[in-house]
Image 1 (cartoon, protein in one colour):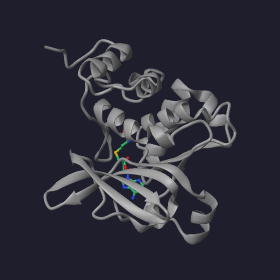
Image 2 (image 1 turned 90 degrees about the horizontal axis):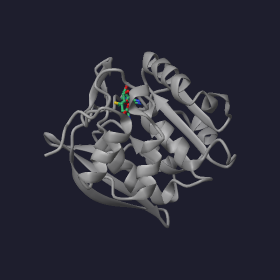
Image 3 (image 1 turned 180 degrees about the horizontal axis):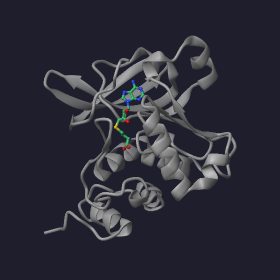
Amino acid sequence: MYNLAEKNHKSLIENLKRRGIIEDDDVYNTMLQVDRGKYIKENPYVDTPVYISHGVTISSPHMHALSLKRLMSVLKPGSRAIDVGSGSGYLTVCMAIRTKVLENKNSFVIGIERVKDLVDFSIENIKGDKPELLKLDNFKIIHKNIYQVNEEEKKELGLFDAIHVGASASELPEILVDLLAEDGKMIIPIEEGYTQVLYEITKKNGKIIKERLFDVCFVSLKKN
Ligand code: SAH
């Protein structure tokens, strides 16, 4: 038996470890440094998505852990990472911690979020957790719909070694394929009939390789 509601962040992360969800030390160390209680007030230490506002949720800790695990090989000091649908900012900050944006100026981490209120919400969360990130040039949360990124903005963004998409797409968005660097990885839920499937997408010699992982349940990636 295990408790669903833990008393603090450390216990939540230990719970994920005990259940075999967090197996690797890198995911453990990264998530341990980002207290979920700073990103959502209600039931932060329960392994479940929690409603934020605007019809969206902060993803469950086990989803954050499983996505981070898949991205670990391309999330290193010096990596460029983007969190699409950054919502609460939780996973964006995990990416910043893992790539050491504070010390490594080659690292670049960006969260992109369609709802302005949520951009503000995530910035407030980060202020309350890791305010030093908000002073950096290589860490940003921007207000933008990923489908509305134009050619000029695409060039400005550059290519990413790690792409995390926190909302489910009807099909693999072309813009994200274009933003993925050679040997880069993207984790994205894609709708299939009435369900959604999490995919790991890798770019190798300019070609896209898709690995089907497992069924998931995310809010949808809005076209406009
Ligand atoms: N990883 C986030 C998930 C938030 S839910 C967290 O754990 O907090 C998914 C987010 O995607 C929502 O905040 C939603 O507003 C955003 N979103 C949906 N469609 C989008 C789009 N086309 N471009 C950017 N963000 C989008």
